[in-house]
Image (cartoon, rainbow, N blue to C red; front, side, top):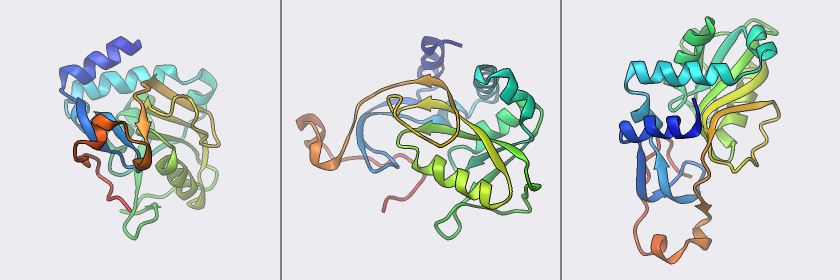
Length: 194
């Protein structure tokens, strides 16, 4: 799947939004990718996961024992990646503000894990998820995401394989362009802001 085909999936599901958005990273943007919406159709979610799995190098695909994703945004794509790679998929969540495995999920010491996200902007959630996976005994060998919004700057400490890079500009609150500053920000993500 090329970038235009991926964007077509977002447009078809009305998941590419325009306005003034406060991202979970704390940055502001005139564009928001509502991955939950693009993934709500099981056939579309499966197509995107198969395309993302195909972007992984063969040597990485062969090593993966488990897929782990952060809740909430990564749950659906993580499940579909597990299906595409034919491995178990689970998620970490933040019951007390820090990611951890719960609900009976566990990793065997040394399990080779692919950490899967929906969108990566600053990489904060991804790095926190990777730390939780490693604290639970897993070894994260790579990360993957549907969308890299970091403009290629994110460093997750492991090889990172996005399906597509979409570089809509993001802004700090003190550097908003006038057209964004003139409208209230909407917080469409699932994570509460600090």
